[in-house]
Length: 126
Picture 1 (spheres, rainbow, N blue to C red):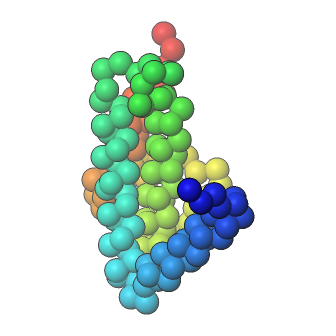
Picture 2: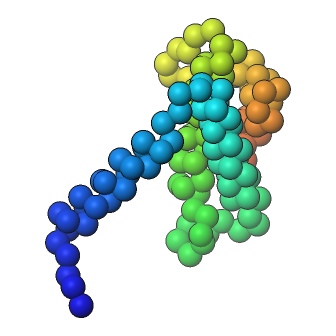
Picture 3: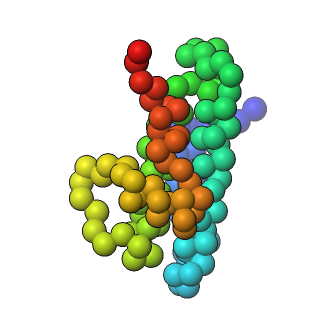
């Protein structure tokens, strides 16, 4: 059995990552947008599947609420980036609020309802 040092393993992973980055480098911006759309739809499906679980246990479940909220934040960022890169949004002010206008654009262009997902991930206290 051969034991490799952590540095060698890190170098190998770094080389794999660099090769992967070279393989996805796209010169046609239209293909890049399609790749981003696929990533958004995959992330949307993951978040919806996680939110539709009947019981969300903080430790024993595969779906932890912190992970769901983190994935939702990433999804919001991807949607905003897509809408801004396509020229649908004029400008983005930081911090970005998910407003009705942004949600309408996301629904029309990507079929992603951010407000409904956010309400489910962050329920109001009663």
